[in-house]
Amino acid sequence: MNDIIKAMKERRSIRNFKPDMPPKNLIDEVIEAGLFAASGRNLQGVIIVAVTDKNLRDKLSEMNRKIGGWDEGFDPFYGAPAVLIVLGDKSVPTYLYDGSLVMGNLMLAAHSLELGSCWIHRAKEEFESDEGKAILNELGIEGDFEGIGHCVLGYPNEKKDIIARKENRVFYK
Image (cartoon, rainbow, N blue to C red; front, side, top):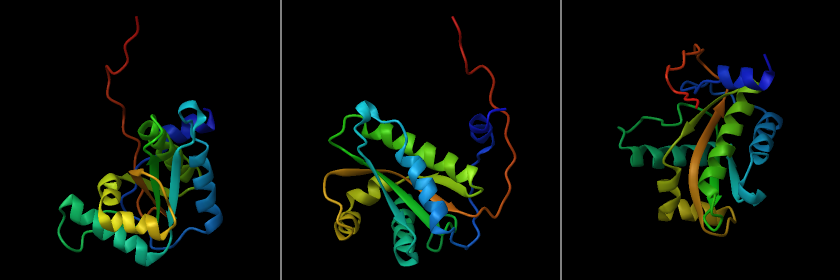
């Protein structure tokens, strides 16, 4: 089986991570794969914020927890030490689709490098908030960006089985 198709079939969302930070070169490989995702008219209107600073990671986790309505102490990033935030430039008509393709590439690249990943939602709400806008401003990010998702990243602390696909999902004519 082709390696890419094999990765697509075997990749699973990881929700239990070891605390060890992956080396920067692996994180950079994942990011580069994300930046090579297809984009409408090749406008490349998606950016990635790589969060490896524990304080910022924990701040984002807490913001996400509050938005999600979970009890204090819950970590919606499941202990992942790194977070890749995908943001779409709202002036690009296909930003949401383009950002989704970036997220897919990030997760497949992580899997291919034996890292775990999971798409965590609520980035939209985080970066619509004053606190989220302040984070972007502090990072020097200008423009009107919408949070597409967080790709949490790290070494998996669990093994997941491949689940059979549901039947009757393809139709030919």
